[in-house]
Length: 108
Image 1: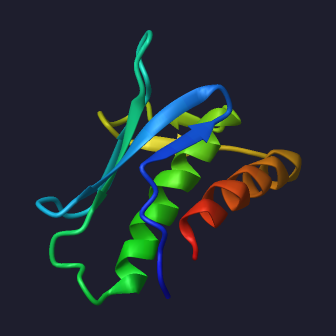
Image 2: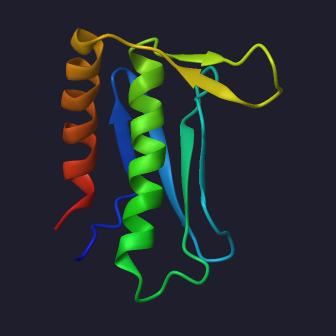
């Protein structure tokens, strides 16, 4: 599987810079602040020749952003930096549509 290493992604009305970071493992994202782009970081360290692990990072970050956009992610009351996801089937369907449109931009 090959990926398009896109540099920018628009999600709703928000613009994100996609950073393919050779010095980082895993992934993360930051929502945009006023008059700036957000960031989606795809850690590529130790991932060369491992398209499945890169795909997992892309899926994780895009799916989480999609769930935030549908108001389905909440802070867990019992731990810091832990999130819970709650949604019904209608929300799930909306999330899948958004997620699919985002993921397709990364696939050659």
